[in-house]
Amino acid sequence: MKNTFWILGIFIIFSSCKDKIQQKYMANSPVYTDYETFRSSGGFVAAQAIEQQGNIYFKDDFLFMVEPDKGIHFIDNTNPSAPIQTGFLNIWGATGMSIKGNYLYANSFIDMVVYDISSFANPVLVERLEDVFPGALPHSDKNYPYSTIDKSKGVVTSWTVEQVTEDIANFQPTWVDCFNCEVSFAEVNSTFDSGSGDGSTGISGSISLFTIIDDYLYVVENGSRLHPFEISNPASPTVNDAVGIWGNVETLFPYENYIFMGTPSGMIVYETSNPVAPTYVSSLSHARGCDPVVVQDDYAYVTVRSGGPCGGDINQLDVIDISTITSPVLKGSFNMKNPHGLGIDGASLFICDGEDGLKVFDATNPETAGNNKIHQFKNIQATDIIPINNIAIVIGEDGIFQYDYSDLSDITLLSSLNF
Image 1 (cartoon, rainbow, N blue to C red):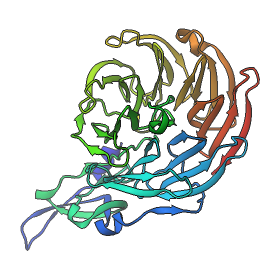
Image 2 (cartoon, rainbow, N blue to C red):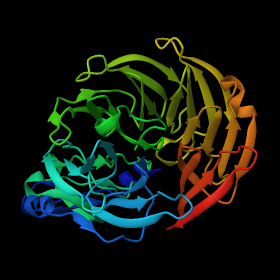
Image 3 (cartoon, rainbow, N blue to C red):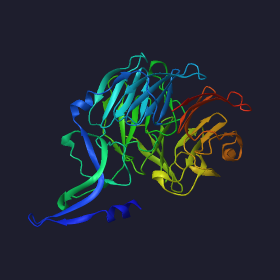
Image 4 (tube, rainbow, N blue to C red):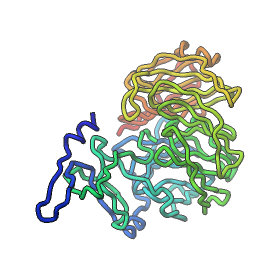
C-alpha cells in the first residue's frame, strides 16, 4: 500500500527556464541539530512522566526503562510493591541500553554514550564515542519515504512530513527504517548477560538490540550490522569494525558464547569465540512475523507475531531443540493471539500476548509447554517481561506491572506504575 501511495504522490515537473526534470513528492523531511548542540545535550534531572513504553532493564534492585529517542527512567525497585521513580537521564536518540559493573551504555542517535552510575542519584557522562552508528535515524512516519539527508547540516533528530522537490539527478528517496525501531523495542534477554562482582551485568526484556557477553557489548544497527565494543575497561570502550549480518535482525539474546537473533523470517545463531567477529552457526526459518527469542538449557522459545513492521499472518509460540546447535529442530508450535516478548525462569514460561494479556505456562516439558497454561492476566496489553527472583516485571502499553510468582498456584499483582 505505501509503495502505491508514494508512486501516486510523485509528479514530474519540467522547468522551462532550466530545462531539467524534478521530482515533487510528500516525504519525511529531516530536522537537523548541529553537532555541538547535540553533543552538549543531556543530564540527569528529576523524575519525569513516562509518555511512551520502551525497553526495560533490571540491575541491583533498580529498574530502568528507555523512553525511545528521549532517555532513561530510573526506578528504585527495592520494594516491588511500591516502585519509586527517582530520576530521568536525558539521552537524545536513546533506544537501548546495557550495564556492566557501574557503567551504563546507551545509543544517542549516531553516538554511543557511557555513564558512570556508581551513584544512581548522580550518573556522570564519562565517554562519548562519536559516529559509531552512522545509519541511525529517529522514528518517523513509515507511510512516507524520506528525502535526501545532508550530514553536513548536523544530526537528524526528528522529521517533518512535507512536500519536497528534488532534481531528478539527485532523486533517491529511501523508505524509512530506524535504529532499534521495533519497540520493539528494542533491549534483549531474559537471562543475565554475563559476569559477576564489579563486572556484573543486568537483565533486560526479550525485545532488545543490545547485549553483553563477557568483555564485549554487541549492538545491532538497522538490522544488518552488528557492532562489537570491547568493554574490558568499562569506562572506555574500544570500537571494532561492524560485522555484516543477514536477516533484518530485530532482537538479540545471549546464551553462553552464542548470540540468538530474532528476524522476521526465523531465528539465527552466531557464536563469539572470536568476540570481535562473531560468525554464523545455524538458523531455523518460520512464517514471516516479529520474533523475539529466549533460551534456557537445550531449548529456544520464539514468539512469532503478525502485523506491524514484520507483516505475516501467523501468531504462535515455537519451541526449538538447540541441543545440537548447528542443527536446531522445531519441536512444537502453539497458537497465540498476538505474542510479543517472553521470558523463561526454570519451569515457568511467560508470554506477553498483546491484548490477550500475560500468559504463564508450565514448561517442565518444554516441547509441550504451549499446551500447559497455568494463568492468564487479561487486564493488561503486555509487550515484554523480565522474570527474576520470583518477580515478573511486565511492561505494557499503559504501564509497568509486577507480579509475585513464588507460588505458581497463586500469582499476585504487587504493583502498577501507570503511564
